[in-house]
Picture 1 (spheres, rainbow, N blue to C red):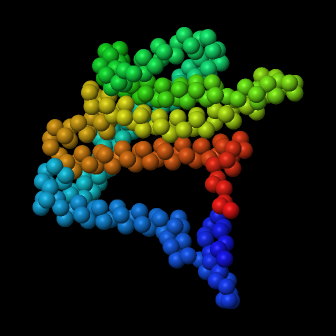
Picture 2: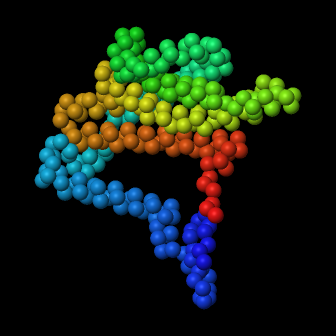
Picture 3: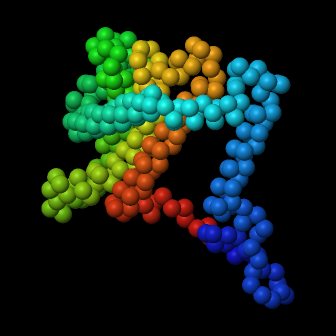
Amino acid sequence: MAIATDKAVTTHEPGTSGPPRKKKHAGWQSTPSVIVLRILVIAAALILWQLMSGTVVPEYAVSKPTEVYDALIKMFSSDAGWIDIKVTTTEVLAGFGLGVAAGTVMGLVLGSFPLLGRVLEPLVAAVNGIPKIALAPLFLLFFGIGPWSKITIAMTGVAFVVFYNIYLGLRLRERELVEVVQVMGGRRHHVLGYVTIPTLAAPFFAALKTGGPLAILGVIGGEFIASSEGVGHGLFTAAQNLDAAAEFAGLIVLVALTLALNGVLTALDTYALKRLGLAARRRPHPKG
């Protein structure tokens, strides 16, 4: 007879004594085992990279992990390297925050007033269809090569993602629940607390996780086009100098920035949904 639980699948054969046995592969699905496997995959990729560089792939194009490590040490030991990281991080956070605020306001206003939404939503969709990087020269004309041009590019990409998630979330809000709260004597703040916020929580935090990489993409794209500092400026300079090691070092910094931002947003998502009592909805139900 097979017994299924939410942690492991166990078997117990008739005529045998003792506790049921766990399947052998269940231990490899635990979190520590997954982390170990990830480390092994990364280590194997670095070893192959080191061995293939210069023999299979030209070294000037991909460098070597050891040279990338030296480039990272050089970046972190210089004032210019930290200034570039600080500038890019500041631009990403500012653009992300402003984009979230602008998108939230747009989504709430157009979603709360159906007529206004029907009039303006096609126009918003038309503007959103323009590649954000194509707007970079226009922002550079308005704000110059300083940080505000990059912040605006990042804000634009994030704002549209947040807007659509909020706007569609309000449109898909169950009207029956709103009417039930109103029939029971609830006012607008009751509808907001019991229906609107729980409905918008999941799409809102999904928009935040999607908007984080878009903010980084907008900032780096703007720094590529015209800038005097920042990680994107360093990447562009390294590409012009055919310095593959410095190029990969800059990419590693961007990956670290992306992971850090995603980690903060995931923690915020988990905390907010737990406070709203929605975390249980994400847990998988045990199989019967």
